[in-house]
Amino acid sequence: MVETAPPPAPSEPSIPPTRVYRHRLPTRIWHWVNAVTLLILLMSGLMIFNAHPRLYWGQYGANPDYAWLAVGSTRDTGFLRIGETRIETTGILGRWTDAGGEQQTWAFPGWATIPTTYSLADGRRWHLLFAWVLAIGLTLYMLWTAIGGHLAKDLHIRRGEWSPRHIWQDIKDHARLRSPRGEAAARYNILQKFSYIGVIFILLPLMILTGLTMSPGFNATAPWLLDLFGGRQSARSIHFIAAWALAAFFLIHIAMVLLAGPVNEIRSMLTGWFRLPAERSAGP
Image 1 (cartoon, helix red, strand yellow):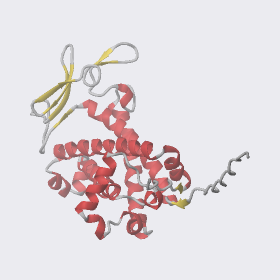
Image 2 (cartoon, one colour):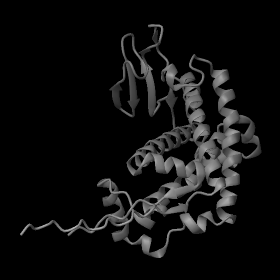
Image 3 (cartoon, one colour):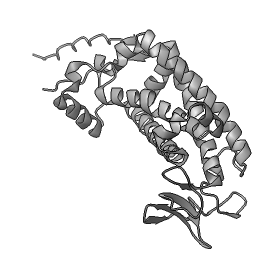
Image 4 (cartoon, helix red, strand yellow):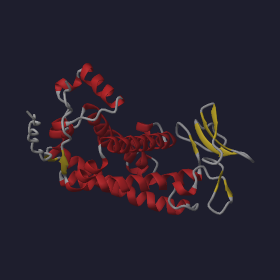
């Protein structure tokens, strides 16, 4: 008697991925405008910094004064000094070779600045123009965040999220590169909420206020800003630190997008629609 193999079990029908409307139009517009604006502000700001690559605390600062941070060069090397710590940066900062093979001694190389050749006047023009774009865009977005429900719906930190256990679990998940799955992927986790609130309501307003504090013309309108930040040079130092904090946020943000699935993440920021990643299987 010949035994026959049992017929194969019918395959389960594939379930189409669930799509949710994750990012509303004002969020998407502000995201992309802000990305371009901050990049131009950073690069033009580095050109302005090249004119005097030293930072001070207090009201005054000039070459003979002690700078807590300085980028400079010797006859053969470039260096970065923070406090009493000196780091050799030849080829990167202070002394580097341009595309034509010429040695340059600006603090930051031309590929990192706007314009790419030294021009303090043009750097200021770019910086001031896009500072207005940043200020107006941030004001409108903050109003929409509060009035349009984005703050309450997406950024509000619920009582359970303040739990140290909950925060520590989210830190461990990020350290293990474990992105949320299913419906949890459509919500901001606690670390995202902390970072977005910090950027929108702390870092960006701080950049604008310290920028205004460095303006001699604005000092007559709001002299209290000088007292608030401890002087124009202190405001310049805080402005520089906040700018690099934003740059660090940008790099971490890009890394998280790549780990979570760049196609899905970028598509959601273009169209608003986000595909929920399938839940992880529980295993045997």
